[in-house]
Length: 126
Image (cartoon, rainbow, N blue to C red; front, side, top):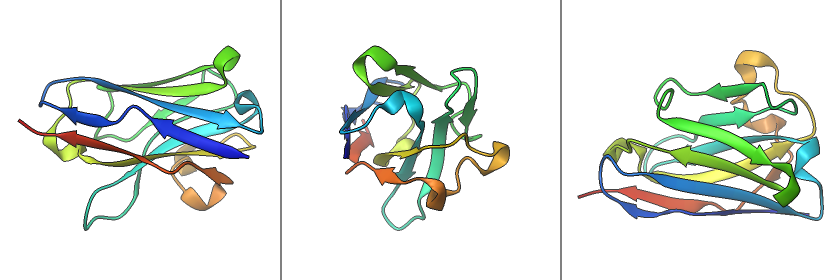
């Protein structure tokens, strides 16, 4: 059972990246999936989440309108499309999965997630 996050890299401010979170050993369609990030010297924070129902998506205020989360069940993958990137988006990004619908405003409560990926680094710099 494993989650694999990928797609990070170096991008200029205003640029875009697509992060992917793929699962092996279990079917991601039956899980809510969230993205968290952690910058050096800062606490981990929730970025976005997609619930078991594709209609339920959640975003941190800091990324609302710039990031979009989606899933491709055929590929067993969840994506995070990141646009208009800012230097303050620089962090390690981690995906996590839970076998339940997140409870509204508690979607970013990390202990509810059962599986975690290893992280992918996003650096936004000119």
